[in-house]
Each structure stands twice: as C-alpha cells, then as structure tokens.
Length: 316
Image (cartoon, rainbow, N blue to C red):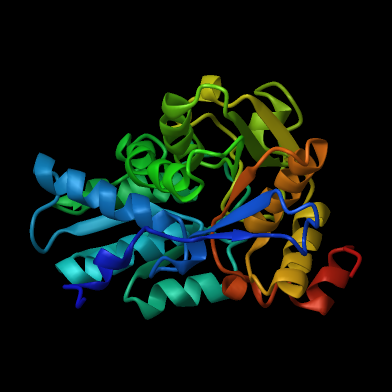
C-alpha cells in the first residue's frame, strides 16, 4: 500500500508486553512513539485541525497557534506541512532543547516563555499563544485544553485499538494525565465495552490532579503531563484512581525501560510505566495496558544524561 501522506500513518500503534520490566507479564505498553511525529499527540493534532476545517475556523494558508510542551506542536507541524499551514508554538522554558529544535526542524516558529508563570498570566506560554492568535488575521488556536476533538480522537481511535488488540481482555487502563484527552477519550470507549475496566491516572508530584486545587501545587521536571489547573478536556469522574509519581521515580523507570525492554521513552512515559507497574503488581491476574506517550530521543540531554541527573540530585 502507498499512502497519500504521512498523516495517514497516524494511529494503529502496537502493543508490547513488558515482561522484562515487569516479569509477571501482565503489563502491556501501547507504543505511541511509533506515530509519525513520535508521540500520542499526533492523534489529536489531526483531529483538531480537521474539525477546525469543517467548522470554517481554519482556511487554506492559515496560521495555527498553540502552547505546547513539544509533542502537540510536532503533530500540528506535520499536519501544517502537509496541508500548507503556518505553525507558531509557545513553549515553557523547561522544555528540552531537543524538542525545541525538533519543532524548528518542521518549520515551526518557536517562542519560549517562563515555566513558572500561571496560565492566566499574559506572558505564560498559554497567554502568549492567546495574544498571538488574536493578533493574526485568520489564525486558529486549537487549545488542546478545551478542544473536545482532543478526547474524541482517543474515543474514536485509541480506545477501539486497545479493545481490539487485547480481544477485550483488558482489565486496567493506565495513562498520564495532562489535558486529560488521552485518558478520558479512550476510557469512555473502553468502559462502554466493559464498565468493569479500571482507569488509572498517573500524575507527577506537584500536579493539581493529586495535590488538589487547594493542595501543594508546585513545579516538577517531568515534561508534558500534569497540570496546575483543571482543563475542560478531562473528565475526572471516569478516572477511578490516581497514582502520584515523583520525578525520581519517573526518570528511573524510563531509564530502566530502555535498558530492560529496549524501549526509549521520556519522563512522562517513565511516570506512566512506574504507575502501571504498581497497579500490575497488585494483581498479576489482571491485564494492564499503559500508554507510552512518546520517544526518549527528545530527552537525551536530560534524564538520559548522567551529568544532568547527578546535578539535579537523582540517583543513577
């Protein structure tokens, strides 16, 4: 088969049993880094753009403006390249240089903003994106945090894929929670097939999901997951349980996954597989499926760099 464009390659990612990372063998990873843009975010990028085109919000030659920690930006850049859109991304300064350079390689205009600023601050990466979108005629701001095409993409693709690939045998679904689209959309589909499936959210220490709105919300080093506010795209009612994971646990699990399974993922992937292993260890008879959201190639100067790890106080 010859595909018309790289966009046609999005989705259909395989499942891999993590029997060396978790010897009981009941932990399975969905390999989202095998999407053409290297992450699960390719799924929502095409979904949000196609919905905007249908709604007349994005016209030929238009501009896409989005705040991102990198992966959604890459997905949007791929769609933009194929369909002729200009793409501008704002990113917080904790995003790795590799990911910033990757966005630029696709032709994205990258604007770096301070990580510590709250979403409502005009100079945060959210605020700058809103301002730029308002200043450019015909610009479209997908806003993955409120765009319901985000969870819908996972309801229509990720959930059905997991159900079919496991022949309906999945017992537990685990995913990191950022915008909440990945966990919410797929969980709704899976629970529609079997209401008994348990849904577990992995969350970095310092994020609102485990800290609570009035809790100790603070900065953390894992990228692209967790939040300091509740996005409209997350349905907390469908998540049965959250597991809080520290930066140290996330990076350690990510490095271990590379060395035991040959699977290179980032900090958010390490966070997800750490939480999933906790769940899988509770009942070896249950099949646990975890989303491994992206590749570790964007973090070589961080969690896979021994000097960086040591400088930040993490054990090797």
